[in-house]
Length: 120
Image (cartoon, rainbow, N blue to C red; front, side, top):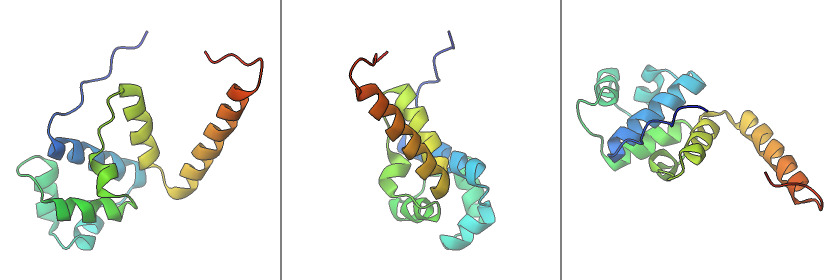
């Protein structure tokens, strides 16, 4: 049995920082590119990601758009740790990978709905 996942961060800026860092790691988008696209300096983004200060909602929304997401996706906090991990990984995927994941989930759920199939 695997250990329980760490408890989710309590503050929205902590959630946003962790999600942005996850998206950066998954997509390879550089901090310089993000900074340029949200009209901030690289130093500003680096300091924000280190937790030196909080960001305003408009800036967080622009950062989310860099990755093709909404502010809601950036700040969404599922209560189920497994769901949180699935959503986090899915949101970190590029569009073509997302389509593959959706296809896989559709196939799996169709199979589960067939008569005589177990829902374990």
